[in-house]
Image 1 (cartoon, rainbow over the protein chains, first blue to last red):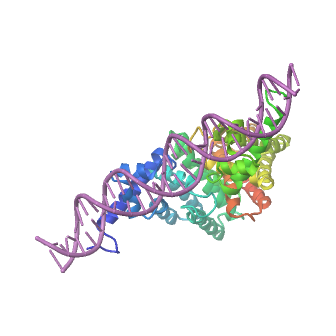
Image 2 (tube, chains in turn brown, green, orange, blue):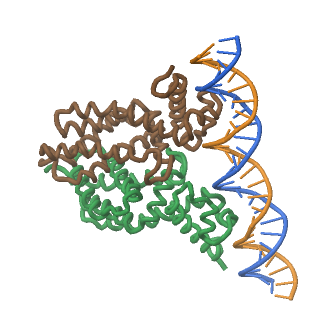
Image 3 (tube, each protein chain N blue to C red):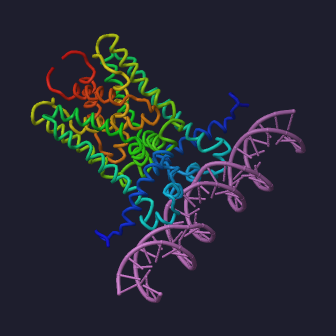
Length: 200
Length: 200
DNA sequence: TTAATCTTTGAACGTGCATTCAGATAATCA
DNA sequence: TGATTATCTGAATGCACGTTCAAAGATTAA
């Protein structure tokens, strides 16, 4: 009757509730996206969320997992397809901003969750994913150091800076919705190219 | 008996409560730094905060104003004293990280307030200050473009990226207290020097 | 000292929240 | 079909919070 120890209804409801949570958080912010509001948006009563997810925390974790998965699938292939580390770093930046541009609700929800979803240091619903994102950048930087495309640099410092710069755009987009993300991406890619490339 | 329409006791209490709020937020995070906890830390009852500050919002605004003022006084002179824009940008980065290193509680409190203190977009207690900080960076970048020290670049993009990189360090410091901020500052300064300087 | 004002107390209040649960309903099975 | 399990309802519960306020205490002025 069901696969993976999960009913058809359960799968559908969970997906629906995760989607409603994303929309609710993107629209109203984390603080005002209560269980009641999310449930109302899905057209069900509050108990349903507790029934399918153990707690609000679990729901939010699923939201994060969903956004991270979709984002990775949109970005990673472009980086891998690049002919070299320099092109790979540019692709990482451009496709990241492209994802932000094409998935504004996802990004708004993520920004809200990261900012408000738990302690600023570890153990929030985003715990682990942040470091993973930084390590993804570091991999590209190591790649470029091995091929000799990049200068001698501290990959950790540059990776943290780049991640911060990208994430900051999602926040700025909330305050400035008309931001030209394509141009922004080009500028940021240029900047980090200058910052990392070897020689003149 | 008093100056500026403010009693001696009032001045002292306000300063004490702002200080306790900073410590409480730095130690427990914004969400767990309730009025009751802040009052307890100051050794007074909850009503005192409402008496001296109209609301929690007002208290937080004072915290932000205090940290911003102290920070500006620590950083701006070094930037102004620099012999040129390149040196100015380096000084801005180094002294910023130095301030983070020497005022960890201030920075932790600020990060918490910015992240959690209100809507992610405008109108939080940090509203205005964020843009002002970006504009301070932009001024240095304009300076360097006028003197010809910097390449042609979008000052807005670079300023946002640099601010994000600096602010990200305050967050990382919470998760990684042993971070070598001096070395980190040098690396970041090098990176943005490469990213902005003209020619080879 | 007395009167007036400033400051503090701490319980009480209202609000909003996540979570629970007994009972109702729907889906699935035998 | 009836029996069993899955899903849903929505009011109730308990908690944490910021704020209020009458009363008490402390300080200052006359």
